Image 1: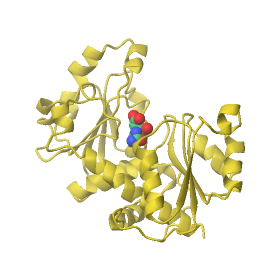
Image 2 (image 1 turned 120 degrees about the vertical axis):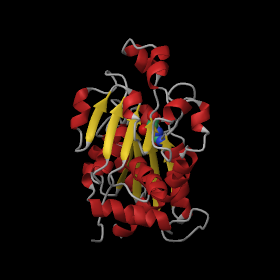
Image 3 (image 1 turned 90 degrees about the vertical axis):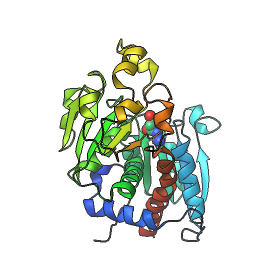
Image 4 (image 1 turned 60 degrees about the horizontal axis):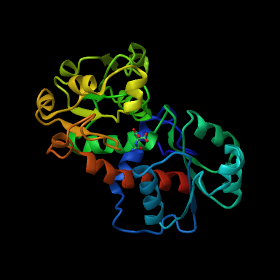
Length: 303
Ligand code: NCD
């Protein structure tokens, strides 16, 4: 089936065939070889929240395909004068944007804008809800090493509750019958989170969760969020930090992933982040390829 996506808002809107098509296209993308595939197109990067990897990779992806980009952030735009999201979206579209890549602190923001603006919207992260391009680049990284997604045991450890990365990954991986384990303190991994998608279970003991893991995905853990739940940094580190010793509980060929930004010494140690099982740099590189595929698919389909 040829995918005919208008916008990329969340993993739930994609068929399994569409996920496979995006991954196949991403594998063929070469960020070191600029092309003119999207010549004449304009991509607006509307970022209400800070970002390094996601924003830069969308920008490089668009430019590598020959599109022009512009960055709109609250500072130094009319957003700081109080303009609404929808009015800003309309303005950017009327200025000539052919697609809007958008990050916002509110869950559902990209879905809202997509209802009002005709141009394709790419959700680059909406609150605690979805981050579909991250899940796609993570799937690309996993398949490079494991050659499949089906049946893998993927342990996602950290502040799962607040993580749009965890949500999008779980939804994507569950399509492929992966065994997904959310792991962290009960406040960060409520039992209810296991009902998110088929194949997801919750576990509060990392030493048990890691046994037989093919993929260990650590998430950023913010000190303020620990404090808000009366959890101490020391307890978090003692129970949930990914260390070389804990990595030995996973399969010998397990890979270690992290969407970034990595807080070294908190969710994982530097030995693990920089160790032989770490795919963190590869995830970043795959971000450009994956976002090239997403933009190519949306903008060519929109023609
Ligand atoms: C994540 C995000 O912003 O959702 N980072 C990313 O996009 N690579 C994860 C995070 O900030 O914790």
